[in-house]
Amino acid sequence: MDELAARDTWLNRVHPLAKLLVTLACISVTVSFSKYNLVGLLVMAVYPASLFILNELSFPDALRRLRVVLPLVCMVGLFNPFFDREPAASFGSFTVTYGMISMVTLMMKGILAVLSSYLLVASTGIESLCYALRRLHVPAILGTQILLTCRYISLLLAEADRIVQAYSLRAPRQKGVHFKVWGSLAGQLLLRSMDRANEVYESMSLRGFTGEFYDHPKNAFQWKDAWYLILWLLLIAAARYFWR
Amino acid sequence: MSHIHITLKDVSFGYEKNKNILTNISFTAREQESVGLIGANGAGKSTLLKLLVGLLPGYQGSVEIMDTAVKKETLPWIRERTGYVFQDSDSQLFMSTAYEDIAFAPRNYGLPADEVERRTARALDLTRITHLRDKQIYKMSGGEKKLVSIATILSMSPDIILMDEPSIALDPKNRRNLIQILNQFTHLKIIASHDLDLILDTCQRTILLSRGNIVADGPTAEILKNQKLLEQHDLELPLSLLGRPQT
Ligand SMILES: Nc1ncnc2c1ncn2[C@@H]1O[C@H](COP(=O)(O)OP(=O)(O)OP(=O)(O)O)[C@@H](O)[C@H]1O
Ligand SMILES: [Mg+2]
Image (cartoon, rainbow over all chains, first blue to last red; front, side, top):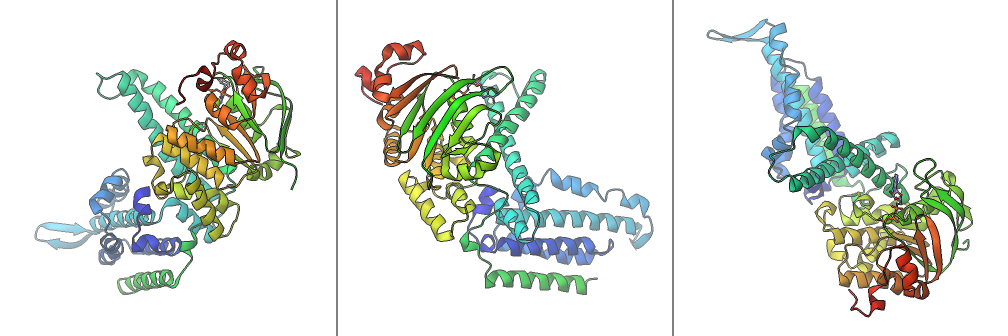
């Protein structure tokens, strides 16, 4: 993820604030569509699709990274066909009910929201995002929380990696981790990652961190950022207006 | 500017109750002094250094840095003037690239962008890692991370440098460069290390810790020559004084 955010593409160079605002607008418009408005949602899919193409991001890669989240999001609408059996259209003997349509739109809303957020993080990086949030006057403590949570997750993963490696080097004949030591390994992992997170936080405060985020001078808000913002907002507004 | 010095008076500290890791530590380190902190594993070197930057609250006695007691209210002021290098680089570094991490402190101290750029470039240059500038930290080798850690505090232009095992993981050439950097820094530094040859090359004064007590404090040349004293406290003569080739 960090690596994607560190690339030097035109989208990555757009000011984080502009990207954050466009993403927020896109998600809120997407969610605001009525639950039977399939066409409107398909139009909204243009936003993530065009960014994926224009910014040369790999879609399969994104699916792989989001494989845990996406199924969860899709579960949300799963029961709608049972509640709402009123027929909407029929093709021969097959009847499409409003419940089926709303299931699909709910899933699409979820997927679009997740994809838009993914695009934001993949093109911006978490530090710049926190900086953008600060610019929107989100309280410093919230930005710090988000930042530290993200750091903590990567620390946790790195620590888990180390523990499993150390384990497998000394238990070379085993596949995976024996269930008897699961408990102690998990406990170790928690202790060690918390310790590490604490030290990282200490290191931050030793270097003057107080909850404010500073960004690159290269990232001053420029005309092209304003254009990016205005164009997308217009497009999103148009989509909302014409495909009500 | 106030006079640069570090003064400890009867400092005791323990992580757990009734179990002191440091007992009755007293010493003063003055401006332009460079102090080596040596002692066997678990002697309390890291603990002592952490105490100085207020990472371990709840000690007894008094710790003063530049006439300012180390306590919660004074920490921002003290930390702005003190550069601390962790024993473990993975604890020190937290941004995505070397540049971001080195620029972190100057940015936080509200310096203008061109000054941040200048200081970061200088720190990269001093540690000779300009080529690592935009490299992802999690992809770096142990020694590369150590060099970045050292650079992160050089960019702060501190008055006091505290380093915990700075030469660990460095190859001979980078270790020599580190010695050069340390010798160019003339304000006040305390270096904890098992690399006694490094101490010999960079510190005029040495403090020997043993089980949380200061058992010797004096000119480095005298203490590191004293085989009996060193062996009494589970240490050995530096290689260079044994007549062996230096690493
Ligand atoms: N977080 C902690 N909680 C409890 N005890 C600790 C903690 N950190 C260190 N200690 C104990 O304090 C003592 C001194 O540790 P310290 O890290 O200061 O030693 P050191 O001189 O730096 O050793 P080394 O040369 O191995 O780095 C050790 O006995 C250690 O077990
Ligand atoms: Mg130590």
